[in-house]
Length: 113
Length: 113
Image (cartoon, rainbow over all chains, first blue to last red):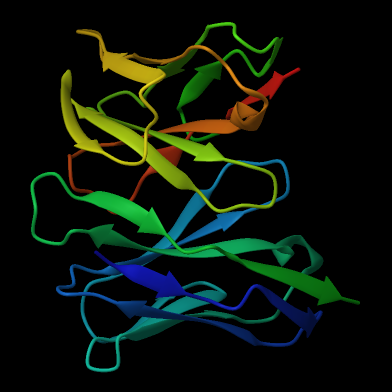
């Protein structure tokens, strides 16, 4: 099986940059994805990393280091609307036709003016 | 709007009862997933269907069952309801069976009294 760890809460200031980390333990690896969820809303797909390096999509970037079993989501030019929970997710088990996505417990990001 | 629809939006019922939650995936998506999210908790994977067949199973209780119909819509049946079943139930869909990019519906909030 696989397990994911991410901080439960992060606080940042509007206009700043924040990084949300995710470490995973796995017997195999297929890729790391990130989802955003506002209070009372549905999760929304943000990004997916299968290879090492940085993937950039506007103000959001996601990074993966397979050798360190580590990834992060980077949010730049923070806006109040970025206040939400952010989940990393992996497939468990990897390389299986019956694998399912396992979500981390989520990081609640609070933005201060 | 993700294109995934779920009905009903809210459901209040008593312990011991049975309910059915309905999900219609995005047009063209063959895979449907069901998740449970309790208050301030992460997303717990329940079950996945792909093109009408069960694909992967998570920690789904025996009191719960699901199916995907030929028109690809899916239903999640919850029976002998307990207070602890109160949660948000999300349906998600994806094009392929192993996609990392899932599109979530708005969820059904179930309250068991």
